[in-house]
Length: 328
Image: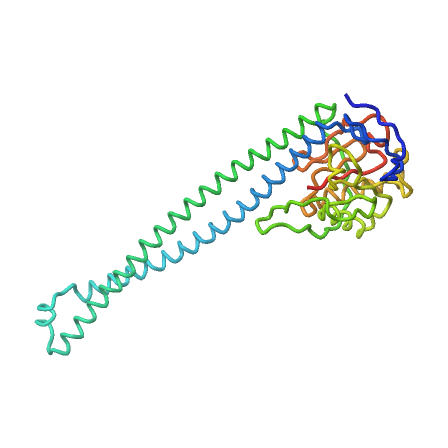
């Protein structure tokens, strides 16, 4: 059951206008532990599967290019073999005695033997190369089949992660299809990735410029990118707690109002939140965004915008006064 969060100001370590003291069963945005953990796990699984799928598709494309090149090389070599065989036929597969009898001199005999020997050697090399190409192409086809199997598995993983997120939303009374009119958004600078395309593991190691807490480097990067594009209104990221992304330095709450977390946004404040939510969704892959919550709706990479039931009737719980982002 979602406990009503009391709108208040965090005291002590944080001074965040409009947020209630942390509750062990729900966070101060009206979300339960199970919801936060399910969304985090589902989003992580979805992103991992998506990254592996993209890497497998790149490997598949490389294999297809290599197969085309091998096929062209084989075709050219077949032409060479046919030419060599035709030349050998015209020259004749002769032994030394036949060559001597058909030669007018010892010099002509030697020239004939050398020519026949060279043709035989060339043909042998060509046939060996053909066998080598055939084996290499067979291996490439096997690798290609492996990549297709990987892609089938990752597509299944994507669907499973999507289902997990939907079930978590349905459990709190949300999950229905929602409508969100996205604003055009600029491309943010991508967060650093590993060589295989995955996101590196990060800890809460960077000072949070919005509180006295900390952020992961990737969350700080996302915050800085948002500010670069003009989203500079009041923001609060880290805060204490036993679950969710905020205590891990992996989430930020962007107020739609310039002065802090007040009532439900309307007019220009609502448009500011719409633009900000659009920015994070547009750059979700580049920044490692797991999900975005804004105005009773939640965006998840596998589902798009859905209704958000993790609310308590307050602007904080309904997320009508701030845009929440969680970062991988």
